[in-house]
Length: 390
Image (cartoon, rainbow, N blue to C red; front, side, top):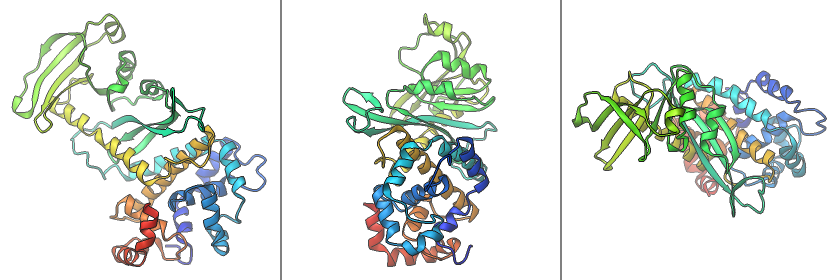
């Protein structure tokens, strides 16, 4: 694959320049750009993500040590760290967000069959949640969260068949999770698995009106009347499968239709769970399994925070923070696409580790990422791998 090209250039070559340029033109990203155009800007930031750089100066210093190779990486020339900093501060972050959406459209179908999701449902199943990234209030004053804390929230919805993100919204820490439901176009027939942070019957009713389905944990103080109960097998852990109507003063107005209430006892915890859903067709035990699959989004957040540079930011403005997060998401998606296109059996973490110490190699990527090459890499670059893990 691309013999003679540097590994970094081989990875970048899977990007559609047409789609990238569409995003740039949409937001006039290159308008009055004298030195650092959008494509080079993206490559600098992606290089920083792939090689686990600590900041803008670190990116520039690393590339400066390989001056003769910079042109062949697609960067043309080394820019001053102030130029890259200024671009992060001022260039519209929506360019990278828009480009990420085009990568999602490529990655999602590649992963539909590659999933731990085993329920026999024809419906698309989404999990929605948020993750908070803590910041210093004295530095990131725009990212309001608490009285003495700043933070940004990464609101994400993933397709549980493949665990690819399909919706991402970045806000300051004060934005409540439930507000994100207003920004989602609900897909008829799809399931949305959500936790108690999205407990708002007016918004849940909008999901119902869109002919989509939700599964959410019920709160202890839920006021309702039971209309009737369906038979259950208690040996499975089910304790009840009821059709109910809300009786609360506000909730009965916000959600005037029937709901299904399912109680399940997990003997392994041990703990009792109560679920609400507007779906009356799927087996009650499968509803509990749907909610159990929600843990995949927790794993997604954990992976992203551990392996991408989004906990320490390379700029202080809202635009710079969003730029870094969105380009990190783009990097994740590019590696995910590469994994499928090369039919690799390695995890994304292993692929990232190999690429992090090989960006200046000229080995074809498909050879580099084989088992034999991995063993050689681990043996020859042991100390370097430890350095990048720190």
